[in-house]
Image (cartoon, rainbow, N blue to C red; front, side, top):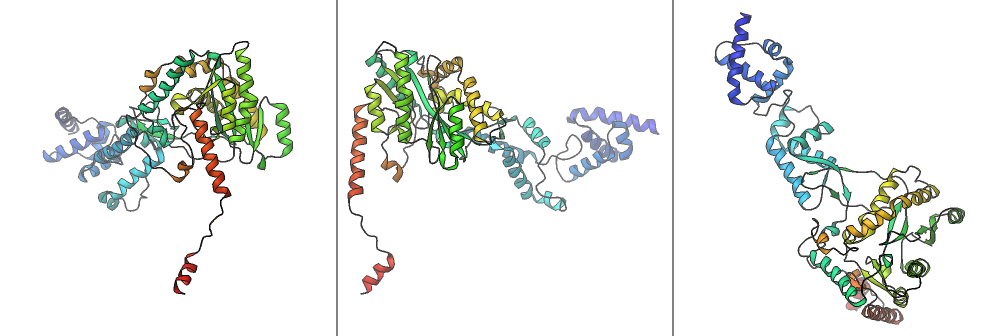
Length: 471
C-alpha cells in the first residue's frame, strides 16, 4: 500500500511540471488536491514525509489556497499581494524620479496601511496587531523581488533639484567673458570660498529604499541646531586658506575661547549665533583672502578670480570695494547650484563631513575643534582640491560635463516674489565686482535710511476705529 502511494506521488509530480510549481508547499497542495480528485486521498503527514517539509507548512499553504492568496516559500502567504507590491514599488519609483526617497519606516507605514485596508486580512487575523511589517528580512525580500535596493541617502534641499540648464550655461558665459577680457587666470589665483556648518555631537545616517536606476539616493535635509561655522577657501593649484571659525560666544565661556585660540591653527571670530554675516565676511576678506592673494601673486600684478555663493553677507559695499582695489574678480554662483558648480561642495566638504562623522569626542568644543583640524588636513589635500575644481568644471573649463548632470531641469518656473526677497538685491549668477551691483546696493542703503528717518505712522486698532465711526 505504501509503495502504491509513493508511485502515485511520483506520477503527480510528473504532472506538476506542466503547471510551473516551484516551491515545496505548492507541490504539497497540488498532490493533496489531486489525490482527492482521483479518489486516492493522501494524508498531510505522509506528503510531508515524502517531500521533506513540515505538516504545518502544508496546512498554511492549504489555508492560503482556500482564501485565494499566494503561497510563499515556507507555506506562509506574503504580507502584501502582487497588486499591493506593485503599488508600493510605483510609489518608491515615483519619488526617485522626483529626486526624493522613501525611508524604511515610511515603507513600513505605507505597507501596513495597505494591510489595514484589506478586509479579508483583518477579518481572518483579528487577534494579530495591524503593524506587522517591521522586520528587515521583509525589506530584503521586498527589494529583491521588486528590483529595488536599500542605500544610505544623501541629504539635499528641495530647491537644489530645481536648477536649470539655462542658469548653468549663464554662469559659464560669465566666466568665458572674463577670460576674453582679462586673459587666462593662473590656477594659484582661482579661489573658491564658502562656509560649512558643524554641529556638536555625532551624526546618524538614514537608510532608504529606492529604485536601482538612481546610484545616489537623496532626502530632504532638516535644520541643525547647536553648531559653529567654518569659513574655508581653496585655490585651483591645490592650496587652501587658513580657516575661519565663527563661534557662538553667548553660549561659550571666555576661558575655552582663549584656550582654543592658542592651541588650534584657525582664525577666530565670535558672533552671537555662530553664523556668518556682513562684518564677518568683510573681516575675512581683509585678514585672510587679500594676504593670501598677495602671497600667491608674488611680484606679478595678475588678476585673481573668486567664486562665491549668493549668501546675504556678500551684499557688502565695503567688501566689494576692497575686492575691486585688489583686482579680484568675483563671480556669484546660480542660486541652489553650489552642489554642482562649487568645488568645495563637490568633494572636500563631503570628505570632511564623512571623516568628522567617524570621530567620537564631538560633544565638547575642544574635542570638536581638534577633530575639525585633523579632518581638514586630510580632506583638503592638494590632490582632492585639484580634483574638486575639475569635477565642478571650472579648472579646466568644462561646461558640457555639468550640463549632463541628472538633477538639472530644462526650464525653471518663475517663483513668486516674497516680501523678504523684495528687500534683497538678486546677486546670484552675476559678477559681484561689477559697478552696477555697487550702485544697486547704495540705492538700497539710501532707501532704508530714508525709511528709518521718516516718522512712523501710528497704527489704530479695529476697536478704536469702530468706536470713532460710531461717534
